[in-house]
Amino acid sequence: MTHAATDRALAGAHQRFTDSNPASRSQFEEQARYMPGANSRSVLFYAPFPLTIARGEGAALWDADGHRYADFIAEYTAGVYGHSAPEIRDAVVEAMQSGINLTGHNLLEGRLARLICERFPQIEQLRFTNSGTEANLMALTAALHFTGRRKIVVFSGGYHGGVLGFGARPLPTTVPFDFLVLPYNDTQAAREQIERHGTEIAAVLAEPMQGASGCIPGRLDFLQALRESATRVGALLVFDEVMTSRLAPHGLANRLGIRSDLTTLGKYIGGGMSFGAFGGRAGVMALFDPRTGPLSHSGTFNNNVMTMAAGHAGLTKLFTPQAAAALAGRGEAMRARLNALCAAEDVAMQFTGVGSLMNAHFLRGEVRRVDDLAAVDGRLRQLLFFHLLEQGIYASPRGFVVLSLPLTDADIDRYVAAIGSFIGEYRALLPRGQ
Image 1 (cartoon, rainbow, N blue to C red):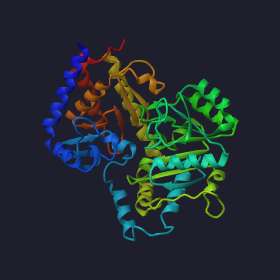
Image 2 (cartoon, rainbow, N blue to C red):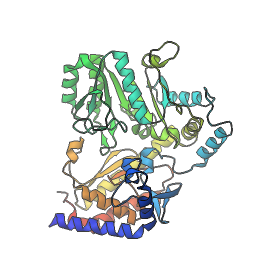
Image 3 (cartoon, rainbow, N blue to C red):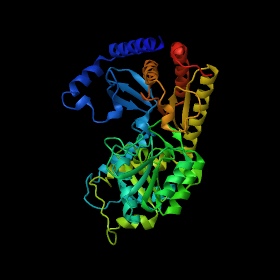
Image 4 (cartoon, rainbow, N blue to C red):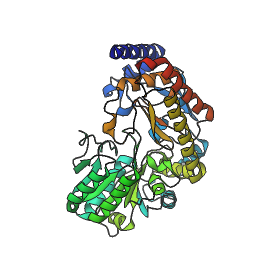
């Protein structure tokens, strides 16, 4: 009975969505002629068709049908500055006035590199890429050559870019490195397996908080064990902080007191432009020094002036260490309110995460790894997504929530209220809290 009722509720939500968004539907159908599923980025698709976003300003978005939304996904963490921040726009325009493609070293890349190294002390030297995906690929390549080994330890539920995703095993689109996939947050398994395969392991790659699999924070003892075990067997510890570097003034790993050998960055640091970077110990990064090192690293747009200018303006004028701490604090307070609401309403619903990133889950108990989420009814996530849209809130179909600097207290109050109304409307379909 509950399954049928949930199906009916979701069908009703789809119908209301379809009726309200004829322009987005038309746009989708037209684009599907030229792109499979009208799509070049899988995460943005959802049935029956995705909204077409026409413009953004501050923390607001407008779709092709003219509906306004408070933006609670912020370009999947890249949009920490909101939309068209004047400080970033002015920096980009100024950079473009001196030429866009300069075919050489330019005046802007060095100052951004210095700023990032000063911001994240574990990064002694770095190189720029165009995405976090590229950054992780290059960091792993560095580890393979530095150690002379081939095996890479990763964790189920880990996501390190479009060609580096893991369930219980590598996803079909994952590059064919020699991966050893271990359970996340299992300290004993990590210690045992790293010790067992120690002479084969080049790198241990992990997110301090798994983002794409549901904002699952890494336990301190687990992350410390990765550091200790990697050191013991002579492997490099690589922390993917593409998402988590925004969660504390100097990155999440720094806040936890764990120093990696290499760190990868991306998302917001480019000021909204395409961006990635990898860096860490100078001795490892020397592999890429064209004067002496054996490795080349190419990329036509690695040092493009728009990203270099936008990134520097964003980090110096908007997302300072103080601003990062303040945004993280707002996220912690919001998540506490949401979890208190779910507990008071006695529903099995919770929000996990750290700082300004969080994810809704329809279950009780601690979430330690992606396997803990296997029993969650995915239709409830969809119902939540469409309910939020009806309340004028743009979030993620998987329940992912991202705060940006322009969001107001009123926006946050609106989101919390929308969760309350969702529980009220669909209480009969939700699992009980006790």
